Image (cartoon, rainbow, N blue to C red; front, side):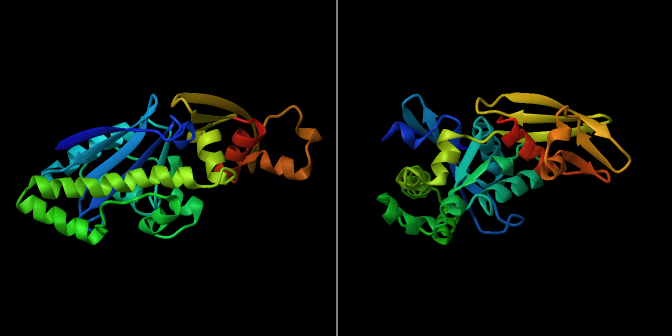
Length: 274
């Protein structure tokens, strides 16, 4: 396994907040079952610079090593920033991790997918708009072909080209985020209000325990007292009678033994301003 690190100056303080990590993967194909992860690149803010780390599997047997090492670093941050990561990178990594018997996973709720949030096309098509100047023009299919050639006959020149492609994918994410208009909701969500996430909801008689992760990557536990009936459980709120019918409905967290996470999330995130 090869681990490389580089540092880059940050254009502005607004480019990257400390709670987020940018990441991208390269694979030997699109099938999570039959193809492998060959390279994982990630970048995060370290003091006043951008630290970029790359994990390259120099042989197929090292796939589990790079996944474990990279996910350990990625999970030290609150939010994962990617491009189409919700549909490709995160499910691919989690499935490969499962198949290899690894404990490492990425939590989809922590994902901030710029493809979805900015509503644009392929990453390479957005770079002209963001001002990013790419030096490498490999496609995903060309990368996979080059990686297979590298595994069969390693060379420093080919290795550097493979690394450069994924490195530029990650650096372009930073540029893409920075180029979004200042009033775009993506900045509010990522930079001004990093997500606070419910990691677990535990139900017991008369109580609902919520575990959340905060912007400092610390776990917070909140107990919500419940009034239980045979059909539903409602938040035990002394001001319940003063609420509107819609607000009362939002306090019903369990109906016919079915927990309603959306209502719990709304109460914790909006009503309590957590």
